[in-house]
Length: 357
Ligand code: F6R
Image 1: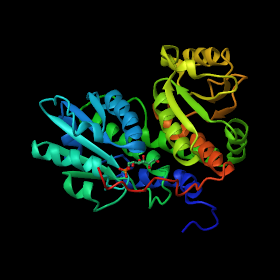
Image 2: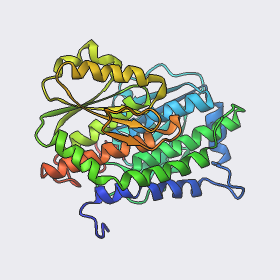
Image 3: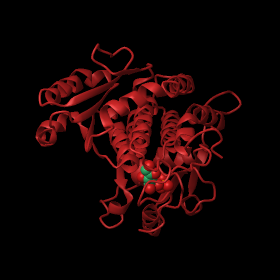
Image 4: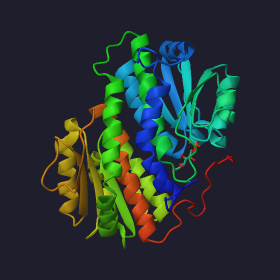
């Protein structure tokens, strides 16, 4: 039930802090340590390469998960769009482990890959919100998202839940492999829950941004580097699917290789700047588009902020920024769709669960 909320999407955005706490609880043992099923930790640890397969928003969560698994557990990871993988399978490693990420657990494109790799005798782990779903039943292992039912077609809380569960998986696998992890993930996820709350309490600011930048535009671009680039891809998908604004996410460094030709007077550019290591370069990219007339909206993180920034997100651990930086983009997409009188929860041409290939 959406209760007092005008839309499920807004309710589900607001549920994200509670989902974070639920996930911490679900994956904590009696001593308060993060833990997952021993067999899963072992299966991932023994893989010489992890293949993450998913579609849409879940694919975008996979791109973040790749960073977690490579940086924490030190296992190489490839991330693939399911519909491409199935007809154009890459050369597989000796001992691959497949991770399917699917909110619904019913996505036909992902299932087709699962069937194909099972035929080859490989092991699969499904990360899903729906216990007993097809992808869960047919895989060897399952990790649940604990996000509660997601009704709005545009995925929000499932995306952050997927990222949190991938962080936990990477963290536990790192310990299993005796790889040092220099931070306390339980503590950091707690900080994230609080930061998420602060963002959900800043709705007026995101409504104002949507009004100012997106009320009349035909297109909008999201730029970022490193993790911010991946979050920009998700922000652009949210915006295009519910507001029908043509929105694209680009890596900051790729602009000059073509995309910058699209910049006109007033083109909205939403730039994420949450990564210290690339802060100077993304700000350089903003200057490049501003010089061509773009209307920039910089969303940065406390500690990296500059006077020109439109919004500053509370500081969280550098590797976990997607969990918070996506919330402004979800809310901006929501308000842009609302202002343009689109059907927020049921956008045209889309279904919640895509059960055809
Ligand atoms: C976007 C969205 C879709 C889904 C995609 C995969 O907001 O909801 O892109 O993420 O169809 O769905 P699942 O995760 O159920 O496999």
